[in-house]
Image (cartoon, rainbow, N blue to C red; front, side, top):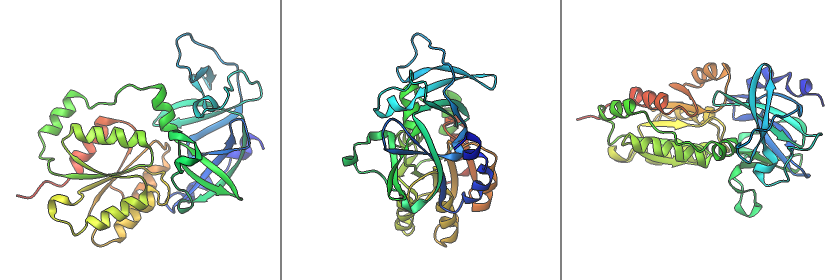
Length: 309
């Protein structure tokens, strides 16, 4: 199937967003195992172009290439997940993606097709499956196991620079009465959860952590009648999550009388203007692209309710 045939109906797939459904592009990395990535993160797929190799580059970076006038890094996704490298395979494909407003290419062995999955069919993988931390969800498509890549984990392993609040934002946070406010963080990526917990620690804000939208909703309902100092005051949620995605989680919060006044920030590496429209549709208060510590911190400061005397 051609690249155009795989991606020419992305606009139509946008209508799935907000209804706990996801469109995934399936691919392989060297054997029969199927892997998946959210199609909204894919700009284009093509045959592997010539790559320029740079001395000193990370071992997972196969090189760089020209993509529509922009030089982008090309990451060997097969090597990142534990397969033999594809950097020297002439038949490999390049999947150009956009995450958190950055563009990069991933080498994959071959592309398959686009499929639709219900969010509740996705689940965290058992450790016994052996995928490790670079797969954050699994599902079945026509009986075949599909492993969803945690691209944030792959990218963080290449660029491990700490994401800290600026000194100015730390001063701004300390000037606001944020303690003892509590924020619920919902994200299926271990790396993302760690980043957020660290961010809120810098702001002196306590976190309640959930690994998917279903767990987040259960935690919120359980804490709805808790004493004031144990309740959640704001939710920061990823969009792509197993069981219940961030859009569906926001809808559920707005439809639950005990929760509907909670402020909700959707925090995602998904790009595209459709996010803003769906954020408004589902009733979220803000969308912040990952991972911009100062931008997220400012949103939290603006949205957290002031503690009552």
